[in-house]
Image (cartoon, rainbow, N blue to C red; front, top):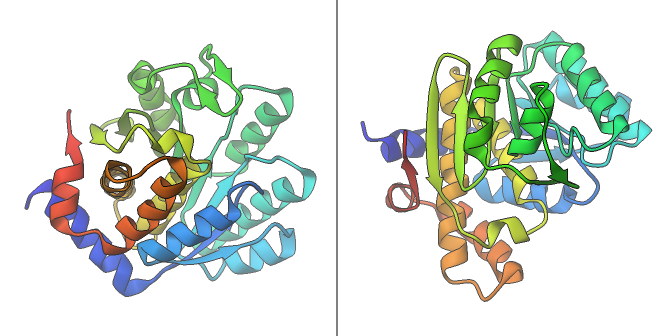
Amino acid sequence: MTFAAAVFRDLDRLRAAKPLVVNITNNVVTNTTANALLALGASPAMTHHPVDAAELAALAGAVVCNMGTPGEENVAAMLAAAAAARDAGVPVIFDPVAAGVTSRRREVARAMLDAGPVAAIRGNASEILARAGEKAAAKGADSRHDSLEAAEAAARLAGRLGCVVCVSGVVDVVTDGARRRDLAGGHALMPLVTGLGCTATAFVGAFTAVADDYFSATLHAMAVMAAAGSLAGAGAAGPGSCFTRFLDAAYCLTEADIAAGARLTA
């Protein structure tokens, strides 16, 4: 089976299952993430209340915790949802937005990872380097490092935590400490659309909800991001139309689109 065929098989399974993906995400991207998950074929639930988040998590196929706006209620909701998900055997996906930039974000990231296992972490190079204990430079939520610079740190972090780590960038690096694949695709307009990085984390959640192998699920989610982004950017006049086209591309994505827009480089 080709890589594109394997990705499309899992996408087809996701579209049929329509898994509930609970998102405790940052206030900036809630609508973006929900619309993208709907276009993908998943069923999104968005919440910031700790009790509500925990109850939803126990019913979910996956729980996505994004610390982009680390207010007290958001953080309490992430921790409550993650605890309930672990008790129910539901995979937890973590997005350590700007993890090394402020003391508050370092504290929240530590709390999330100290509380129990996660299935996958998706972040940019600076975020992954920071969580791996390496020196990293960032400009807010934007990385000042190339994804390949963080590949070895990502492998060490994955091995230490027993999870999958994805470093997103021009080339996405996916590793579980033992395995690693590098994936190219997407479009230069994607970083100019607020929330597409967070969308990638949500897509990882959707794919882990229907897969037993979280490494393959993460890789396949990023391939769908790359292929949809490539299609979206190719005909866009700018970031606004790029996002609209991204939703349409995710909704209509075919095996041929994946083959054309996402390629393994290692």
